[in-house]
Length: 353
Image (cartoon, rainbow, N blue to C red; front, side):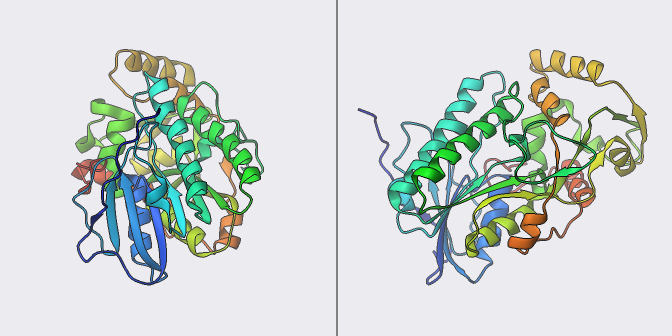
């Protein structure tokens, strides 16, 4: 028999939950994306209440929101009572670390996500909005954009892309089995905001990245690597798309990205530095050595994946979600770097400075 942790009573935010309007549950509500999504939801008059689920309760108390400490892994609390009566469940929870123990991230990200999906169906929730990623896509072009029909087989060596791709296959089957559930898959580019800087530094760079020194004029050169061309998006702009997916009768996958695509010269311009063309192999070798020594948390396999990700066409989101990013990709990166320098965060466990 599987042990189930008893489900405690949700902790209300100051002011309590809202009255009439949509009831939305956000799984993984206290991280980079979750905080922006909760903020967008509670500020929208169509949303009556938000239940935010996270492993640790935050000190942050937005109006119309309640909090519940929940572990989505197998053996965690029963999710069905928490989802019952909801108009939509937004699933954002994801564990990036430890990259040296991929079975542990698989347990949370894949098995935990499947528990969320199954609980949505068991609770009769009419809409599931899931945070997929550009990382779900198979290697693709850097000189043109691809739409949502591009294959989603990921890059098999990297745990992050492998897990995102696997869940795409899970949802393919899920949609066939549960045709009455409106399933939306968001596939955003890399997401940045000022308040996420401390969290992302811990997840990807570790202590080797001196946040206070990441400022224009102090970094003389930026590597210009073959294949280093990617898209970025401000997290608040991604949250606007999630809100639109809750309030509009859409389904399917949506690419989310801002212009312009970023490469070595573009990053050098942000830092007022000089781009230097380098082969990828020695950079990867240095990263691999640092990762093996546990000096940096990001694996060299994720580096390989980034160099292979396609550029995405977000036309479908523009048309069906009436969505346009308010920030350019450069502005998103600049705000993130500002957060690094100022050790910015939020009163939630993932975003603590």
